[in-house]
Length: 264
Image (cartoon, rainbow, N blue to C red; front, top):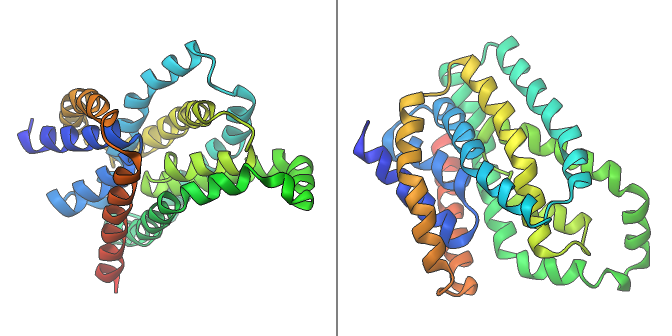
């Protein structure tokens, strides 16, 4: 066990507890840029880390009846098969070492920048979708194609999460909010957490089969993250969301741009 990994888990867990988002967005870049762990291993380990840490959240939301299982089923119909297909493609194309890291780095940088923008625009998007009665054509489009669009969002998330471990949180939550504006905010969060667990578990187990999961690292991260989430949750109630989200978005934007320049 490395004390550095435990501290990393503590820091990321604290950030997640404080803001409610940022697990994969922070953990994978931290492991790669901070500890020099290959991107593929950072992604694979973080996927199983996410599945285990979010499992308790599903139980809590399910007991409170804040999970829309119909939406979870539609998202999973797209995301789980696309995650499996992505893993098969990685295996068949023999993407290992630097080649795999190059693919992940390119996708990860875009995912981080998209996550940052989503965080910054979250308030405006929320107000927009809660006034969609002003846009009758958009409302009609939602009603007619919402089920198919949900599956399509799941497909995109399956690929994105499998390659980068990023997207199941902020991006997935915002997509659910856009597609189901009448869903209560707590149910949007609960639904996306419930969807994230099977997706990250399937993707993580696939990475384990590919040999891109470090179990000792996973154990160290969990040792730090559990108390970190608790401490962050306690403090988060006292800090304004208007302060937290711009700070987190700025961090993710900086990390994403750094990866872009590293690729160039």
